[in-house]
Structure formats: C-alpha cells, structure tokens
Length: 141
Image 1 (tube, helix red, strand yellow):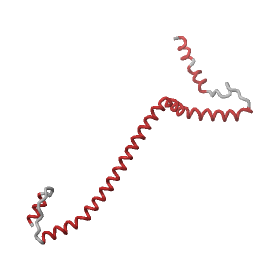
Image 2 (cartoon, helix red, strand yellow):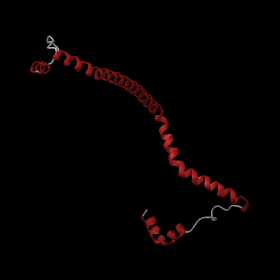
Image 3 (cartoon, helix red, strand yellow):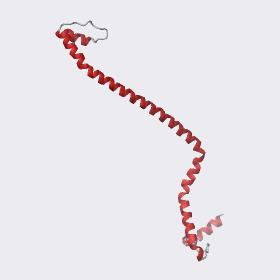
Image 4 (cartoon, one colour):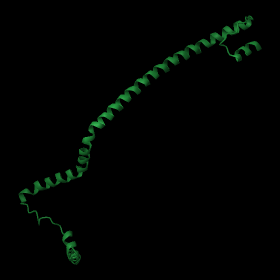
C-alpha cells in the first residue's frame, strides 16, 4: 500500500495534468451525423440531473402518502368543525345585536315612564331584582 501511495505522490503532477485535460473526443468518438442527436441527448441528461433531487424526494415521500392523506383528512374535519362553530357564533352575534337594538330603542320609553311616575309621585314597590343604587337614586329624588 505504501508503494502505491509513493507512486501516486511521485506522479502527482502528471495525474493533475491528466485530470485537467478535457476527455472529450478521446473516449467518445461520434460520427458527425449524430452530433445534433448527442447535443439533444446531453441537454436531456442535464435537465434530468437538475431535477433528480426533486424526483428522489418524491420517491421518498411515496411510503408516507397514506399517512399524509390521513393528516389532511383530519385537518379538513377540524376545519369543518371550526366553520360550523364560526357560523353559530356569527348567528349568535346577529341575535345579540338585534336584542341590543330592541333594548336601546326601549330605553327612552322606560325613561319617559319613570319621569311620568316621579312627576305624579307614584311609588313603585321595590322589586327583588332592582339594584340598591337604583332604589337609592329614586329615594333621593
């Protein structure tokens, strides 16, 4: 083994020159008729080599295809659930807005009734659900 390595080191310069020389037309003699075909073939080979990594990645992912499909199905089911929940929330918000409109439109009527009752000294019996603050303000007037 040492002898071989010594020979390689001695011929280092000649080996380097041989590697730097183009090997074109030395090992592949091609007739002129086929040159255009070879150019096309080399273009195809270069394109394939450029896309080889994508092809290999695709081949590696084939065994995981079933697992990925299951994950996608689960994600789709979750999205359907979220869409349903969002629709329900939107309906609830719309109902709440309608209730707020009704309440806000009835506030002036309630205030007008309270003013009428206060002007005529009508005392309403305290209801269990009235707040102390409201009762105190009525008594203070």
